[in-house]
Image (cartoon, rainbow over all chains, first blue to last red; front, side):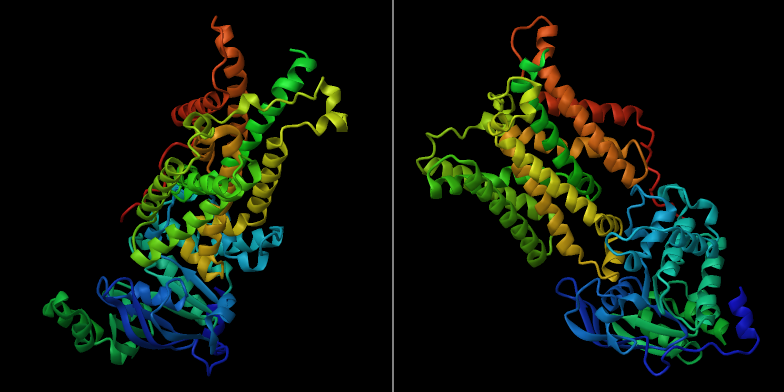
Amino acid sequence: MTIELATLDGKAPQPSRAMESPLSIRGLTVSYGQKPAVFSVDMAVEAGKMTAIIGPNGAGKSTLLKAALGIVKPLSGQIQVFGAPLERQRARIAYVPQRASIDWDFPTRVIDVVLMGLYRQLGLLGRVRNTHRLRAKHCLERVGMADFAERQIGQLSGGQQQRVFLARALAQDADLYLLDEPFAGVDAATEKAIINVLKSLRAEGKTVVVVHHDLATVRDYFDNVFLINTSKVAEGPVDTCFTAETLQATYGGRLATAQVDQLAAALV
Amino acid sequence: MTGAEFVPLSLSPLLIGTLAAVACALPGNFLVLRRQALIGDAISHVVLPGIVVAFLVTGVISTWPMMAGAAGAAVLAVMLIEAIRRLGRIEPGAAMGVVFTSMFAAGVLLLEQSDTSTVHLDVEHALYGNLESLIWLDATGWASLLDLEALRGLPPELPRIAVTLIAVVLFTVVFWRPLKLSTFDEGFARTLGIRTNLLGLALVVTAAIAAVASFDAVGSIIVIAMFICPPAAARLMTNRLEHQVLWSVIFAVTAAVSGYVLAGYGPLWLGGQDAVSAAGMIATMSGLILAVAARFGPCRTRAGAPQQG
C-alpha cells in the first residue's frame, strides 16, 4: 500500500478539480409506479471523501445511485458529474452493482469480468492485449483474488464475487466510484479487503460513494453521510449529520428508540 | 451415393438446413441467456399477418414481398412489445404474450376473411417447410459447382439463407462485447454508455430476420428448435460464452446433417418405405442432443445460486 504511506508522509493527495463536486444532483425525482421512489432530492458529493448513502429498505438508496448513473430515467432533476453532464463524463465513473442483481450462472470467468471494466478502452473490436490482461490481474491482486482468475464466476462465494466486482471497478480507473451495497452478505475477510481498497482509493484522491446498510460501521468507514427516506433527510460530515435525531428522522418507527440511543452513544 | 445423385437431390437441402440451423442458433445463445428464448416462437406466430398482408397487396405468392411482410410484422411486434412493456410497466413475457397471440389471431382472421383461403398457405407448410423439395435440377454432379449455367438454377432459398447467415455472423462478431456485457450485467453496461435497449432491440430484429429467412425454407419447427436446443445444450458443455457459441454451431450443424440423413434413409434402414420430414427429424435430433447434454454435459450444476452469509 505505497499510496497510504504517501499520505502518512504528509503529502496531501491532490483532489482533482477541487472546485467541482464529483457528483451533484438537483431536484431528482424518480418513480417506478404511482409513488415516487426518490422525491426532489438534492445532493452534492464532496471530492476525495467517502460518503455513505443510508436509509431504510425501499428508501430509494439504490434508485438514487442508478439515476445518478443514468441506469434509470428520472422524472425530473439535473445530474452533473465533475461539473459536466453525465454523458460526457462516463469514463470517470466506476460502478459496482448489487451482487444479487446479477445472474452468476452466466458462462464467464473471473478475468473476463474484470476485463469488462476496460470496455471503454477496448471498444467494439479492439484486441485484448497482454497489457490489458496484466492490468486486470493487478486489479484482482488488489482485492486478493488473483488466484481465482480462471474460475467460472458461479464457483465463487458471495464475498469473492463481490471482490471480483470491485476489481472490475478498479480496472475502470475512474475518479468517482459508486458502489451499491458492497458489504451486503459478505464474510468478514471480504469486508476488510473491500474497505481497505476503498480507503486506498480515497488516499489517491478518488471519491467514493457507497450505499450502506450497516449503521454500526458508518463511523469507522465513512467521512460523510447522506440520509434518505424517499426525500433527503440530512447530508454532511458523520460528526454532525449521523446523530440520533437524523437517524430517528430517517428510520422513523422502524428503528427502535433504544437502538438509536445505543448507536448515538457509540458515536460520541 | 454418387455425386450425380447427391448433388442435384441432397446437396442444396442439406446446405439450406445447415445454414438455417446455424443462423438461428447464433442469436439463440444470447436469447437463452437473457431468458428470452421463446421469442423465436413468438416471431413465428407474429409473421403470419405480415405474410398475408404482403399477399393481399401484391396478389401473388412470391418470396421477396412475403419476406418483407414477415420482417415488417416482426419489427412491428417487437415495437409493440416494447411499447406495452414500458407504458404498462409489466413484465416483457406478459407483453410478448399479448402481442404475439393478437397478431397471430389477426393473421388467421385476415386469411379467413379474404380470398386467400384458396391459396396454398397451409399449416403443414408453415410447420415443416419444404426442405426436401429444394432440389437443384440443373446439377449433374460435383462438376456443376463450377458450372455458372447450372449454378443459376440453384434454389433461391440457398443464397438467401447464406446472405442471412453472413449478416447474423457479422452482427454477432461486431457487437460481441456489448452483447455479452449487457446480457451479463445490463446496469453496468449502461454506465459504460452502451445503449442496452437499442442493442436488445437489434438482437431481437436479428433473430427475427434469421427466423423469417429460415421459416420459408425449413418451417417454424426448425426455427423454434434451433433458437433453443443447440445453445442450451452448448451451455451445459462449457462455462465460457466464447466456447458456448462454438459448441452451439457444432450442435446445430450436427443436428441438421444427421437429421437430414436420418429422415431420408432412416426409415429405409428400418425396413420402411418412405422418408420422413427432414425438418421434423432435424428438430428431433437437436432435442436429442439437448437431452444427452442435459444428462452427461460437464457443466450442468447450478453453481451461481447466490450464497447467503
